[in-house]
Length: 500
Image 1 (cartoon, one colour):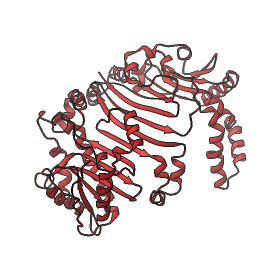
Image 2 (cartoon, one colour):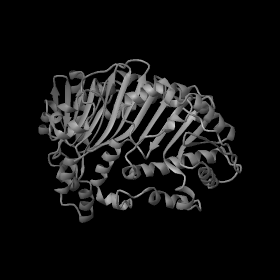
Image 3 (tube, one colour):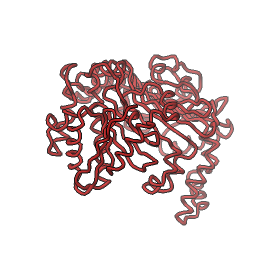
Image 4 (tube, rainbow, N blue to C red):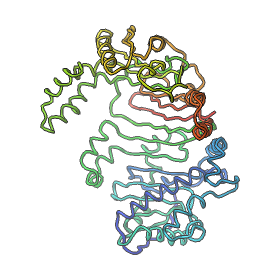
């Protein structure tokens, strides 16, 4: 990496807090640009990224790229075309239009600035916001096209935040590095020219593992964050506990021609105990919504003692007396029943049958028309006992539920047909929407929403015209899913929205 001579300036005094606000605001501004701008830029996607000009000692980093790879631009353009009304609202008239102006000019006008005069002549398409553990300072890396104009424009934006702070600016490889203090900007530029975040082996390995970086990405050295005195001072000693058990994490927002996805990875200190007991793919093919978790039963008592019991003790309340009162009132034994409920796995599902009646539900009896079920993978004897008490409790408040035993637990449902359907091996996993939306099918925490099924049912319910218009605008949406998987000490999780 070649270093440009750092140009360091110190404008009128301003507070560090104002600088941080400026950094966040800049991120939000470029975030709006990323929604549409890259679909109308040249299909280059090349050039330096913010992590190429930030020091290797950065422990927290987020980037927005309004000039991503050509494949990402094409994919986003195709997705935008599925929503012509949205494109119209954003002011997108043709593919050659620079949409930064309609997105930014109102924002900069609040600072008494003119987009054409004060922003457009220097602003680029990429921005990175980072925290450097060695310099103990936040750094904003803004891609620029003209150093002199960028210096003036950045100072003008900083002046919008209020008086009494110092801002440092240094230039490196087509970026302005902005920090609260001028000395930090020069130091960051010098450090990055020797070894950048892109040269950090751990960062590179994580980004390679994550794959296509898309229009947004972030990375965190969780161990480095937890050991930072400045971060601990700002957020308290709890920050170390918050990141315990994991070393690094990364996330990216990216597109394909038929989906948007937020993909993430995290490296754990120890390989987790994974219980393969629940699988959304085994649900009925007409399932409209489903959620599953696995392996939390063994942790139930420990978490209950840490949370519920410790909380009562901290408030000076006799926890044992409270538990006794709950048992007498509702017939539940805690934490034993919580362990049984979570067991090896728990799955909640809503079928597609009679969903069109959802807007017309008027009471508990109408709920029985819907197929709603809770499947517990747990000790069959304990599960049957808990299910009976839950059914009896529901009856006391006017809801009719049924319980059906299975070989590995019990199903509690709104009607016998639903109980039978959720007990067997369904074909949801073979459906097109499931295959496209669920990135990591299997027996791990997951959620699936069949948007096609839900929209079709709601449109069949004769909604008011204004509601029908909204539902028709959502027609391109197909399904949404959250899924995760483990590979030794690496966890992968993906949120994916698919479109027809």
